[in-house]
Amino acid sequence: MKKEYTYVTCDNCKDWKEEYINQAGRLPCRRCNDTHQVINPKEILCNLCGECMCPDYENEQGTWYSQEPHGLYEASVTGGYESYHLFDMNKYTFSFCELCLRKLFVLCKIKPKVEDVNLGTGETTEIDWEDDQIPYEYRIWEGNGGAHQAYLNKMCNAVKECPNRALYTVKLSDEFTEHCCCEEHQSRWDNTINAELVKFISNVFKPFL
Ligand SMILES: [Zn+2]
Ligand SMILES: [Zn+2]
Ligand SMILES: [Zn+2]
Image (cartoon, rainbow, N blue to C red; front, side):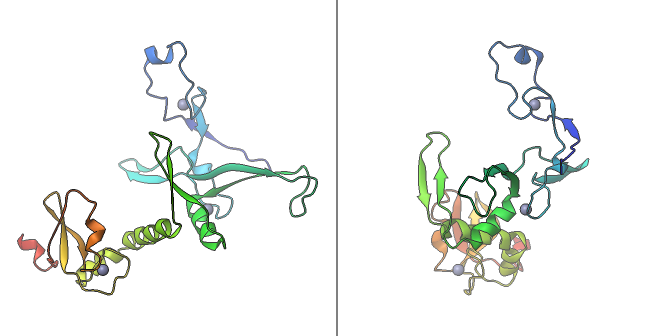
């Protein structure tokens, strides 16, 4: 089934100045290849869940969609002569959004290799799968209000569902935050330069500060 898309103006090059556009040797717009048209981001869908692959944000005009699909966009695989589960010479093209990729990774018996990439030097450092997945689960927990609720319950929120009471509140650049931790998890803040641990301040006392 052939997909028919609608197109919108490319955000990346729409504000380029005339003198830049006319510059000799200029690279074409990486997003639209100077066509000034890109696929309507709302129509860029994940094959697995069917949801939009472009992150959206709320602003004054309503919902704004990034024009950049996130995830594995238009990957393809072609079956070969010895293929069994794919057919020889059939090319399969598909896109998976980041959420579906995360779910697939979790299902993997052998986890994907994860590397921290330094964009400046191109150097990569391998990191354990758990050191990627655990912060991800924390992010989701925090996003769902789990960290805030832990703070209200006077519990450590440095890691997801820590069973310990909060002993310290984290001050960031002299501002009191809802981040709090137990003895065991205070090292979580060791590498944050502007962080300072003070005696725990519950939300009951916070208004008086
Ligand atoms: Zn463009
Ligand atoms: Zn998906
Ligand atoms: Zn803790």
